[in-house]
Amino acid sequence: METEYHQATTKGKVIFISLMLFGITLVLSAEHLATTLFENTSFTSSLNLPQIVLLFGIISFFFYLFGASFLNKYSKRIIQHTQYPPPDSNIPFKVKILRGEKALKQAKHIHFGSLFFTFLGFVKLGAAIYFYTVLTEIT
Image 1 (cartoon, helix red, strand yellow):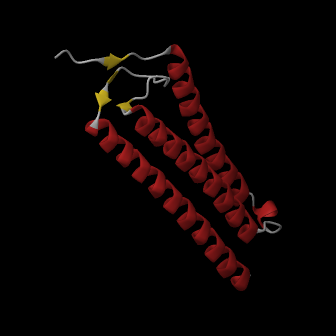
Image 2 (cartoon, rainbow, N blue to C red):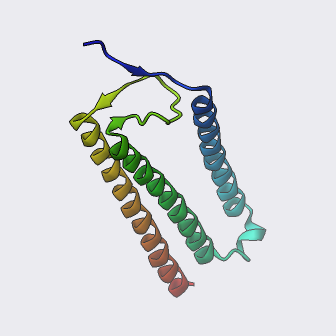
């Protein structure tokens, strides 16, 4: 039996590259914002650190929730078609097609990943709320 491969699409490559650039931009802008906020001593006196910690926690919570919902939707498409990757997916790389039990196993793993992303989002939100209360009591 010949092995089938799902070919990479241009749309998938564009989406992959744009998401990578968006992630790099987020990391670099957060680093720049943090160094600007904490190095400038005249601005630090008016800095409300607990609110900034809570804001970053809430923003990251929604990023985790978006990732979890995407993974959950993708796993449902795999189960619906009993094929990994689903026929209508735009992927950036050439991938071996899995069908039947192997595809359902892959869908289970992706669904577990979505649950893990949801858990991480709630942990991040809980940590932000905890640090917000601790920092407001200290200041």
